[in-house]
Every structure is written in structure tokens, then in C-alpha cells.
Length: 125
Image (cartoon, rainbow, N blue to C red; front, side, top):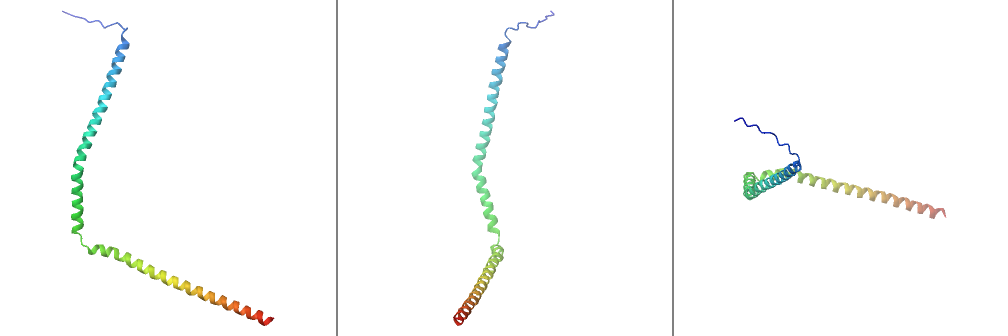
């Protein structure tokens, strides 16, 4: 009972094999892409369900953390900045006063020079 099978030597239907293979690969790829989309959609919906709870938990932790901190620290952090702004404002006021004084001095000298020149012209006539 030695059965020997001979290979199929009919090559007239090779195009049918190629077409069936292409159809199989296309359908398989489309199914795999749909499976991937479904998996991502499921994961996203699971994350979306838990996101509100997670956000509330993080908000609670933040409130607890700020509630446990002393308020004096906030004041001491901003105090040097406020002092620096005040001192800078005083220095700016001093500079404006000095510039105003110098302007008045220069204008007074110019006024004296013009008066002197007028006197010279009047006396020269």
C-alpha cells in the first residue's frame, strides 16, 4: 500500500492563486487595522472614564498640600520684591527731581546769558 502522489503539473490556473492570495492579504490587513482601532478606542474610553476621578484626586491632593503650608511663607517670599519695587520707585523719584533741578539751573543760566547779551546790545547802541 505504497501510494505516491504526483505534483499537480497544471499551470493554467496560477493567476487564480495569485488573485486569491491578494484578496486574502487585503482582507487580513483590513481586519487587523480594525482590530487595532478597536483596541485603541477601548483603551481611550477606559482612560476617559477614569480621568474625572483622577483629576478630582489630584485636585484634592493639591488643596491638602496648600492647606498644610503656612501662610507666612508666601508673605516672606514676596516681601523682598515689594521692597525692591519701593526702593526703585524712590530712586526714580530722586532721579526725576535731580533732572528737574539741573534743567532749571541750565534754563536760569541761559536766561542770564540772554539778558546779559541784550544789555550789551542796548548799551552798545
